[in-house]
Length: 191
Image 1 (tube, one colour):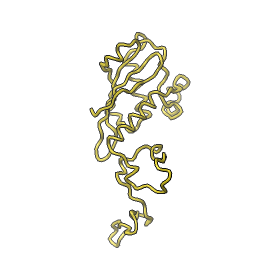
Image 2 (cartoon, one colour):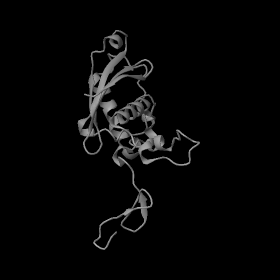
Image 3 (cartoon, helix red, strand yellow):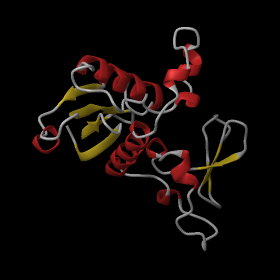
Image 4 (tube, helix red, strand yellow):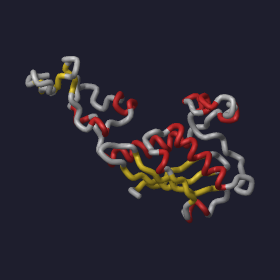
């Protein structure tokens, strides 16, 4: 900080003095950082350092990361049937219960779309905080290839990814096989 209280750039490196006088690294696009796991993965282990721009992501890359993580989430089986959601709401919404409740063996006649939509929305709301909950829409779609198979539900997930300076539109086409509980995310596009 200079005498007027304005942060000053450290001319020796790409660092800026913080409020406590300790130099902190400047990061390009800090609002576009990928997940911690993506940042910890070393794409170039032979190099000792990385430039700040190398671990920032573009908006399109962020869409891909969210799509990948959404596929992991929807294809992981939770322990929903072992947790009393009424008595232990914190445990039900914690990482202990990460994933979808088992839907295998559920026939279309016995499961109403509204119930499945509610389950998918709750799972995404609980475990994918990058999607803004108020913008999240899970709706049936007219995927002809998936709908030709018995017990396969086609749906799309739409919403906004929480990003600065403005949110990013997100939409994926998906299908849920009620015999195996397998979710297939078949396509991504900006909505």
